[in-house]
Every structure is written in structure tokens, then in C-alpha cells.
Length: 408
Image 1 (tube, helix red, strand yellow):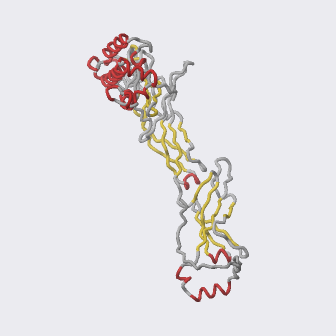
Image 2 (image 1 turned 90 degrees about the vertical axis):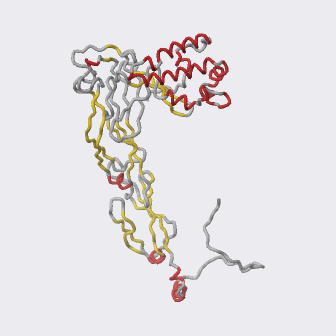
Image 3 (image 1 turned 180 degrees about the vertical axis):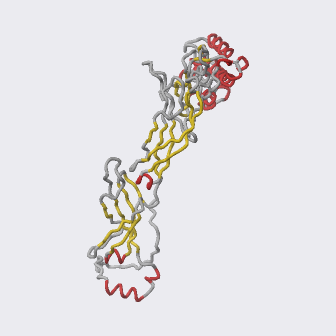
């Protein structure tokens, strides 16, 4: 989006200079109100005119009132939004923006770009370029959720797409062959209008959008001269099947771009369909870039005596087997590194590493309640080497309960 980040300029809404007198404010208001009065507009422009009319009226109400104008000059719309400073007819900033949002001088309240069937989320529209090249059309942005298994193995996705394409009959002109159009009065033949769009509670941006009257063409035809196929709309709906590939090792937030697959608009370079990878959290594996971690349960017997077995099922369905030889004891929380069993790198055949976190499984209460088991354990386990406190003068015997540590 080629937005400037400008705040609303109420003086521009009325078409006057900042130093205009009250008489000039009033004169400009009457002129603008007359030009945009809904009753004086054709049916297809009435909704647009009503919004413009309300915007002009609100700007006049602020600028004609000395106190409100002084507040606006000092603090902008944010100051008008302050309840202590009043506002246009009790209307707060968001109401004002909602009334004006999606349209500007010569604009209209929004323009529908589906771009792809079922794909919510729209990118920005580029403005007219100073080098004479076509401005860029809107991108369609979609958050696409994937599992860790899918980005481990890679995935091909096919989906139905529905978008606007230039009418093949009139090639996007909107008129019959040989018909001579006239300049669109709404955009003065430029094919685009200025739109104000809210980007925050107290901020709007200004951007160029295709004119909704001439559909970005800059020209309009009489009713009898309009293209029979598109009825002057310049575009027709196209449905087709598109395909994307989620590459192995794709990361959260990564973008997959289908260039030129968004809506076609006369006079604009076609935008893209963009998928943003949203990786779901896995119930067993955790990912850190190209590495993976996974907890494995190991019994006390295995930790002491060793074992050789499958400890987990990997993301591609393979079993991962390890051998822990006797002679060393595994500790709670200890980490075992397995080279090359992490996430695949996007380039080449190498992978990150897999880290196994030991989770010791202790004997259950039933086993501990058997005196024979305790006797056997005492007989084979070495004596403890815990610290001795034989030189303390006083000893208190206390009771304890099992609990979780809460340090908050």
C-alpha cells in the first residue's frame, strides 16, 4: 500500500486553506453540500454522495465553531476525540472515521475485491506512480495453518479460486467495439480516486484506489454503448483451480506468493495472492528453527541398567530407536542429541538436530508399598553419600506434605 500516513485534513475536505475566514468556511460548506447532496445524485451514486455529504457537514461543524476549530488546529482529530473538548454533534473520532472510512474526495465507501474464493484479508492498493507505470493492484493475504508434520514432509495444496479478470469481449474497456467513451466525472478521467482508511483509533492513511464508477478505466459509456458481456463492469468472474507447495522446512510467518492471481483491474498491475504460514503447536515436538526437541520417558530400571528400544515416532512416521548402554545412569532432564534428525533445511538434503529430553519414570506406589521390593532395592543399591550433621546440638523432627512449588 502506498499510503502516506496523513491524518484527516478537514480543510481539505471543504477545499479551503487553513487560514480561511468563517465566511469562507460557510461558503465552501454550502458549495460542497450542494454538490454532494444525495437528492441531486443518480441512484448508483447516492450512497457515495450521502457519505460525502455527512463528511462535509461534520468538517463544517468543527471548523465553523471557534472553540472546536482551535482545538482541531492544535491537537488535530485526536483533540476532537477527547470528551473534554467536545466533538461534532457528540460524535467521537471513530464515528467520524467510520462515516468517512474507505472514501475520500472522489472516492466511495470501499470497493469489493474478492480476489480468490473464500480468502479473507486484503493487502493495500498502490498509488499512481510518478514514472507513468501502472499502479499496483491489491494483494490478497491469507493466513494458512499447517501442522509440523506437513512442513516436515512438504505438502501440495489445491484450492478453488474465484476472481475478477478483464472482460475478454471488451478487453476491460467496458464498452462495445467502436463506441467512444467520455471521461468519468467522478475521477476526472484518471481512473483512480483518493480514499481515507483507518489504521488506528486516531490515525487514517490516504491511498489511491480504482474509481468505483468507471472501474479504474477513467472512461464511461452510455448505457446502450456498454459491453453486452460485462455490462460496463470491465471485468468478468473467473473460476479455476490453483496449487501451492508448502516446502519442507518452511517456517512460521514465511510467505508463499502466487504472482498476478488477485483481481484484475483496468489500468492496474494485477496483485498477488499471498499465503502466510501459520504453524500449529505440536503436542509432542517443539521446534527451534531447524532443530527439534522431544521428551522421552525412561524408567528408573532403564536409566540404571540400560536399554535398546524405539523411543518415539518421528513426524514422517518412522520409529526412532536408541541404545543406552549400562555403565552410566541417565538423569532427569538430561538431553541426548541426535544429529541430522531435526527439521529439513529448505536447500539441500541436510537437516537440523533432534534433542531428546529425559523424563524419568519412578516406581509407582503399589511397587513401593511392597516390603519385599524395598528390601531387594536396599540390598542391591549402594549406600548413600548424603551429608551428615552429627555435630548439631539440637534436632527437630518435622512433618512434610508433597506439593508443587509456587514461587509467585
